[in-house]
Image (cartoon, rainbow, N blue to C red; front, side):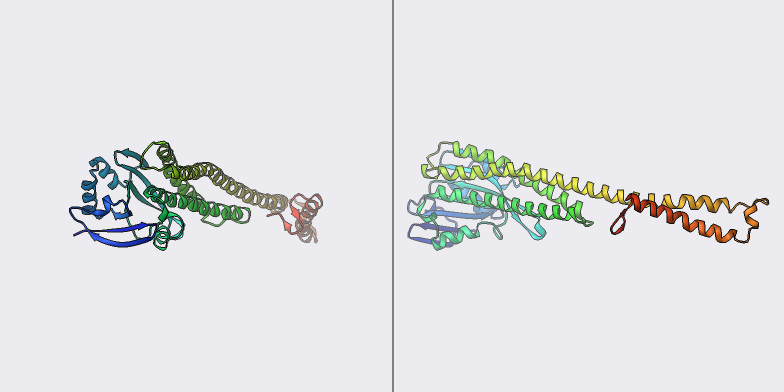
Length: 333
Protein backbone atom coordinates (compact mmCIF):
# COMPACT_ATOMS: atom_id res chain seq x y z
CA UNK A 1 0.00 0.00 0.00
CA UNK A 2 1.24 3.52 -0.82
CA UNK A 3 2.43 5.69 2.03
CA UNK A 4 2.41 9.40 2.69
CA UNK A 5 5.57 11.21 3.74
CA UNK A 6 4.55 14.11 5.93
CA UNK A 7 5.71 16.66 8.47
CA UNK A 8 3.35 17.81 11.21
CA UNK A 9 4.02 20.63 13.63
CA UNK A 10 2.58 23.05 16.12
CA UNK A 11 4.41 25.67 18.23
CA UNK A 12 5.74 23.11 20.70
CA UNK A 13 6.59 20.10 18.55
CA UNK A 14 7.36 18.87 15.03
CA UNK A 15 7.19 15.30 13.70
CA UNK A 16 8.32 13.72 10.44
CA UNK A 17 7.02 10.26 9.56
CA UNK A 18 5.18 8.15 7.02
CA UNK A 19 1.67 6.79 7.30
CA UNK A 20 -0.41 4.36 5.29
CA UNK A 21 -3.42 5.41 3.32
CA UNK A 22 -6.76 4.69 4.91
CA UNK A 23 -10.41 5.47 4.59
CA UNK A 24 -9.92 8.45 6.88
CA UNK A 25 -6.77 10.36 7.68
CA UNK A 26 -6.99 12.57 10.80
CA UNK A 27 -4.36 15.00 9.51
CA UNK A 28 -6.78 16.27 6.86
CA UNK A 29 -9.14 17.56 9.56
CA UNK A 30 -6.74 18.34 12.40
CA UNK A 31 -7.14 21.76 14.01
CA UNK A 32 -4.09 21.42 16.25
CA UNK A 33 -1.41 20.44 13.75
CA UNK A 34 -0.23 22.01 10.51
CA UNK A 35 0.58 19.20 8.08
CA UNK A 36 2.87 19.22 5.05
CA UNK A 37 2.45 16.29 2.67
CA UNK A 38 5.09 15.95 -0.02
CA UNK A 39 4.41 13.57 -2.94
CA UNK A 40 6.16 12.50 -6.11
CA UNK A 41 4.13 12.31 -9.30
CA UNK A 42 5.01 8.61 -9.46
CA UNK A 43 2.84 8.04 -6.33
CA UNK A 44 -0.32 7.92 -8.39
CA UNK A 45 -2.38 5.95 -5.87
CA UNK A 46 -1.59 8.44 -3.11
CA UNK A 47 -2.40 11.40 -5.33
CA UNK A 48 -5.69 9.89 -6.44
CA UNK A 49 -6.60 9.01 -2.85
CA UNK A 50 -5.95 12.59 -1.71
CA UNK A 51 -7.88 13.95 -4.68
CA UNK A 52 -10.87 11.81 -3.67
CA UNK A 53 -10.62 12.84 -0.03
CA UNK A 54 -10.41 16.54 -0.88
CA UNK A 55 -12.90 16.29 -3.76
CA UNK A 56 -10.51 17.85 -6.27
CA UNK A 57 -11.76 18.39 -9.79
CA UNK A 58 -10.32 15.93 -12.30
CA UNK A 59 -8.98 18.84 -14.40
CA UNK A 60 -6.91 19.96 -11.42
CA UNK A 61 -5.51 16.43 -11.08
CA UNK A 62 -4.59 16.55 -14.77
CA UNK A 63 -2.78 19.85 -14.16
CA UNK A 64 -0.80 18.22 -11.36
CA UNK A 65 0.49 15.58 -13.78
CA UNK A 66 1.05 17.98 -16.69
CA UNK A 67 4.74 18.79 -16.27
CA UNK A 68 4.67 21.28 -19.18
CA UNK A 69 1.95 23.44 -17.63
CA UNK A 70 2.61 27.15 -17.26
CA UNK A 71 2.35 28.78 -13.78
CA UNK A 72 -1.27 28.94 -12.73
CA UNK A 73 -3.31 30.00 -9.68
CA UNK A 74 -6.78 28.71 -8.85
CA UNK A 75 -9.04 29.31 -5.90
CA UNK A 76 -11.85 26.89 -5.14
CA UNK A 77 -14.07 26.35 -2.14
CA UNK A 78 -11.85 25.06 0.63
CA UNK A 79 -8.46 25.19 -1.08
CA UNK A 80 -5.96 27.24 -3.12
CA UNK A 81 -3.94 25.70 -5.93
CA UNK A 82 -0.72 27.01 -7.50
CA UNK A 83 1.41 25.56 -10.30
CA UNK A 84 4.99 26.75 -10.69
CA UNK A 85 8.45 25.49 -11.64
CA UNK A 86 11.34 24.70 -9.36
CA UNK A 87 14.73 25.68 -10.79
CA UNK A 88 18.11 24.68 -9.45
CA UNK A 89 21.68 24.67 -10.72
CA UNK A 90 22.87 21.29 -11.88
CA UNK A 91 26.27 20.03 -13.03
CA UNK A 92 28.32 22.45 -15.14
CA UNK A 93 25.98 25.29 -14.21
CA UNK A 94 23.06 23.96 -16.25
CA UNK A 95 19.62 24.99 -14.98
CA UNK A 96 17.40 22.03 -14.08
CA UNK A 97 13.63 22.47 -14.20
CA UNK A 98 11.05 20.58 -12.15
CA UNK A 99 7.27 20.90 -12.22
CA UNK A 100 5.75 21.64 -8.79
CA UNK A 101 2.12 21.98 -7.72
CA UNK A 102 1.07 23.34 -4.31
CA UNK A 103 -2.31 22.84 -2.64
CA UNK A 104 -3.44 24.71 0.48
CA UNK A 105 -6.38 23.70 2.67
CA UNK A 106 -7.26 24.91 6.16
CA UNK A 107 -4.48 23.07 8.01
CA UNK A 108 -2.73 21.09 5.27
CA UNK A 109 -0.24 21.99 2.55
CA UNK A 110 0.40 19.40 -0.16
CA UNK A 111 3.32 19.67 -2.59
CA UNK A 112 3.51 17.54 -5.74
CA UNK A 113 6.97 17.15 -7.31
CA UNK A 114 8.49 15.22 -10.17
CA UNK A 115 11.39 14.13 -7.96
CA UNK A 116 11.61 14.69 -4.19
CA UNK A 117 15.32 13.86 -4.05
CA UNK A 118 17.49 16.92 -4.55
CA UNK A 119 14.73 19.52 -4.22
CA UNK A 120 15.24 23.01 -2.75
CA UNK A 121 13.12 22.42 0.37
CA UNK A 122 15.80 20.79 2.51
CA UNK A 123 16.58 23.89 4.57
CA UNK A 124 12.87 24.55 5.12
CA UNK A 125 12.35 21.02 6.46
CA UNK A 126 15.27 21.55 8.82
CA UNK A 127 13.82 24.85 10.05
CA UNK A 128 10.50 23.19 10.85
CA UNK A 129 11.98 20.17 12.62
CA UNK A 130 14.49 22.21 14.62
CA UNK A 131 12.04 24.97 15.47
CA UNK A 132 14.10 27.74 13.87
CA UNK A 133 12.35 30.85 12.67
CA UNK A 134 8.66 31.60 13.05
CA UNK A 135 7.24 28.88 10.87
CA UNK A 136 5.87 26.78 13.78
CA UNK A 137 4.03 29.78 15.22
CA UNK A 138 2.30 30.58 11.95
CA UNK A 139 -0.74 29.01 10.22
CA UNK A 140 -0.67 26.74 7.18
CA UNK A 141 -0.81 29.56 4.66
CA UNK A 142 2.58 30.76 5.95
CA UNK A 143 4.08 27.37 5.02
CA UNK A 144 2.37 27.70 1.63
CA UNK A 145 4.09 31.07 1.23
CA UNK A 146 7.47 29.69 2.37
CA UNK A 147 7.42 26.96 -0.28
CA UNK A 148 6.84 29.57 -2.99
CA UNK A 149 9.41 31.90 -1.46
CA UNK A 150 12.12 29.22 -1.42
CA UNK A 151 11.51 28.47 -5.09
CA UNK A 152 11.60 32.17 -6.03
CA UNK A 153 14.78 32.67 -3.98
CA UNK A 154 16.45 30.01 -6.11
CA UNK A 155 15.37 31.95 -9.19
CA UNK A 156 17.42 34.84 -7.79
CA UNK A 157 20.35 32.53 -7.02
CA UNK A 158 20.33 31.25 -10.60
CA UNK A 159 20.10 34.76 -11.99
CA UNK A 160 23.09 35.83 -9.90
CA UNK A 161 25.08 32.78 -11.07
CA UNK A 162 24.29 33.62 -14.70
CA UNK A 163 25.34 37.24 -14.17
CA UNK A 164 28.64 36.06 -12.66
CA UNK A 165 29.26 34.02 -15.79
CA UNK A 166 28.48 37.09 -17.88
CA UNK A 167 31.00 39.17 -15.91
CA UNK A 168 33.69 36.51 -16.41
CA UNK A 169 33.02 36.39 -20.14
CA UNK A 170 33.16 40.18 -20.28
CA UNK A 171 36.66 40.10 -18.77
CA UNK A 172 37.64 37.35 -21.19
CA UNK A 173 36.35 39.38 -24.13
CA UNK A 174 38.69 42.24 -23.21
CA UNK A 175 41.69 39.89 -23.22
CA UNK A 176 41.54 36.95 -25.59
CA UNK A 177 38.27 34.99 -25.98
CA UNK A 178 38.65 31.22 -26.04
CA UNK A 179 37.31 28.96 -28.78
CA UNK A 180 34.11 28.24 -26.81
CA UNK A 181 33.36 31.89 -26.06
CA UNK A 182 30.41 32.33 -28.41
CA UNK A 183 28.96 28.93 -27.43
CA UNK A 184 29.01 29.94 -23.76
CA UNK A 185 27.37 33.29 -24.52
CA UNK A 186 24.51 31.63 -26.38
CA UNK A 187 24.18 29.04 -23.60
CA UNK A 188 23.78 31.85 -21.04
CA UNK A 189 21.22 33.59 -23.23
CA UNK A 190 19.26 30.33 -23.47
CA UNK A 191 19.25 29.92 -19.67
CA UNK A 192 18.16 33.54 -19.19
CA UNK A 193 15.26 33.03 -21.58
CA UNK A 194 14.21 29.89 -19.68
CA UNK A 195 14.33 31.79 -16.39
CA UNK A 196 12.19 34.56 -17.86
CA UNK A 197 9.73 32.04 -19.30
CA UNK A 198 9.06 30.67 -15.81
CA UNK A 199 9.38 33.86 -13.73
CA UNK A 200 7.13 36.27 -15.65
CA UNK A 201 3.98 34.09 -15.67
CA UNK A 202 4.57 33.28 -12.01
CA UNK A 203 4.73 37.00 -11.24
CA UNK A 204 1.29 37.48 -12.73
CA UNK A 205 -0.16 34.49 -10.86
CA UNK A 206 1.32 35.61 -7.52
CA UNK A 207 -0.17 39.03 -8.19
CA UNK A 208 -3.57 37.38 -8.60
CA UNK A 209 -3.03 35.29 -5.46
CA UNK A 210 -2.11 38.21 -3.18
CA UNK A 211 -5.03 40.25 -4.49
CA UNK A 212 -7.50 37.38 -4.16
CA UNK A 213 -9.73 37.48 -1.07
CA UNK A 214 -9.72 34.10 0.67
CA UNK A 215 -10.36 32.97 4.22
CA UNK A 216 -7.39 30.61 3.79
CA UNK A 217 -4.98 33.56 3.55
CA UNK A 218 -4.58 35.32 6.87
CA UNK A 219 -4.10 39.06 6.98
CA UNK A 220 -0.71 38.65 8.67
CA UNK A 221 0.78 36.91 5.62
CA UNK A 222 -0.23 39.49 3.00
CA UNK A 223 3.05 41.40 3.43
CA UNK A 224 5.01 38.20 2.73
CA UNK A 225 3.21 37.67 -0.58
CA UNK A 226 4.03 41.24 -1.51
CA UNK A 227 7.69 40.42 -0.85
CA UNK A 228 7.54 37.42 -3.20
CA UNK A 229 5.86 39.58 -5.84
CA UNK A 230 8.59 42.23 -5.47
CA UNK A 231 11.26 39.57 -5.99
CA UNK A 232 9.58 38.45 -9.20
CA UNK A 233 9.33 42.04 -10.41
CA UNK A 234 13.04 42.43 -9.68
CA UNK A 235 13.68 39.28 -11.69
CA UNK A 236 11.86 40.67 -14.71
CA UNK A 237 13.81 43.96 -14.62
CA UNK A 238 17.10 42.16 -14.00
CA UNK A 239 16.40 39.93 -16.98
CA UNK A 240 16.26 42.97 -19.25
CA UNK A 241 19.60 44.28 -17.99
CA UNK A 242 21.16 40.80 -18.21
CA UNK A 243 19.95 40.42 -21.78
CA UNK A 244 21.60 43.74 -22.65
CA UNK A 245 24.82 42.47 -21.08
CA UNK A 246 24.69 39.33 -23.22
CA UNK A 247 24.18 41.43 -26.34
CA UNK A 248 27.15 43.55 -25.29
CA UNK A 249 29.25 40.39 -24.97
CA UNK A 250 28.45 39.51 -28.57
CA UNK A 251 29.31 43.05 -29.64
CA UNK A 252 32.63 42.84 -27.78
CA UNK A 253 33.40 39.57 -29.51
CA UNK A 254 32.58 41.07 -32.90
CA UNK A 255 34.86 44.02 -32.08
CA UNK A 256 37.62 41.60 -31.07
CA UNK A 257 37.26 39.68 -34.36
CA UNK A 258 37.26 42.94 -36.31
CA UNK A 259 40.45 44.01 -34.55
CA UNK A 260 42.08 40.66 -35.28
CA UNK A 261 41.09 40.93 -38.94
CA UNK A 262 42.41 44.47 -39.02
CA UNK A 263 45.78 43.32 -37.67
CA UNK A 264 45.92 40.56 -40.28
CA UNK A 265 45.13 43.05 -43.03
CA UNK A 266 47.87 45.38 -41.74
CA UNK A 267 50.38 42.53 -41.83
CA UNK A 268 49.37 41.57 -45.36
CA UNK A 269 49.56 45.20 -46.43
CA UNK A 270 53.12 45.49 -45.05
CA UNK A 271 54.20 42.34 -46.86
CA UNK A 272 52.53 43.41 -50.13
CA UNK A 273 53.97 46.94 -49.92
CA UNK A 274 57.49 45.60 -49.45
CA UNK A 275 57.33 42.93 -52.13
CA UNK A 276 55.72 45.04 -54.88
CA UNK A 277 58.96 46.96 -55.71
CA UNK A 278 61.04 43.80 -55.20
CA UNK A 279 58.83 41.94 -57.66
CA UNK A 280 59.22 44.81 -60.14
CA UNK A 281 63.02 44.85 -59.89
CA UNK A 282 63.33 41.06 -60.07
CA UNK A 283 60.91 40.94 -63.01
CA UNK A 284 62.75 43.74 -64.84
CA UNK A 285 66.13 42.11 -64.63
CA UNK A 286 64.70 38.67 -65.19
CA UNK A 287 63.83 39.55 -68.80
CA UNK A 288 66.11 37.80 -71.31
CA UNK A 289 66.53 40.60 -73.85
CA UNK A 290 69.82 40.55 -75.74
CA UNK A 291 70.47 44.30 -75.64
CA UNK A 292 70.32 45.06 -71.89
CA UNK A 293 73.54 47.00 -71.11
CA UNK A 294 73.35 46.20 -67.37
CA UNK A 295 73.77 42.48 -68.09
CA UNK A 296 77.32 43.08 -69.32
CA UNK A 297 78.46 45.13 -66.30
CA UNK A 298 80.76 43.23 -63.92
CA UNK A 299 78.98 44.62 -60.85
CA UNK A 300 75.45 44.34 -62.22
CA UNK A 301 74.46 41.30 -60.11
CA UNK A 302 75.74 42.69 -56.76
CA UNK A 303 74.13 46.03 -57.61
CA UNK A 304 70.73 44.42 -58.16
CA UNK A 305 71.05 42.39 -54.92
CA UNK A 306 71.97 45.55 -53.08
CA UNK A 307 69.00 47.33 -54.60
CA UNK A 308 66.70 44.49 -53.47
CA UNK A 309 67.99 44.98 -49.93
CA UNK A 310 68.09 48.77 -49.96
CA UNK A 311 64.56 49.34 -51.24
CA UNK A 312 62.70 47.42 -48.48
CA UNK A 313 65.14 48.82 -45.93
CA UNK A 314 64.32 52.34 -47.02
CA UNK A 315 60.59 51.59 -46.98
CA UNK A 316 60.71 50.14 -43.46
CA UNK A 317 62.74 53.12 -42.23
CA UNK A 318 60.19 55.48 -43.78
CA UNK A 319 57.33 53.57 -42.11
CA UNK A 320 59.11 53.73 -38.77
CA UNK A 321 59.61 57.47 -39.13
CA UNK A 322 55.94 58.02 -39.92
CA UNK A 323 54.68 55.52 -37.31
CA UNK A 324 52.40 53.90 -39.84
CA UNK A 325 52.90 50.21 -39.01
CA UNK A 326 55.20 50.34 -36.02
CA UNK A 327 55.05 50.65 -32.31
CA UNK A 328 57.58 50.07 -29.53
CA UNK A 329 57.26 46.30 -29.90
CA UNK A 330 57.76 46.22 -33.69
CA UNK A 331 55.09 45.50 -36.31
CA UNK A 332 51.51 46.13 -35.19
CA UNK A 333 50.27 42.62 -35.90
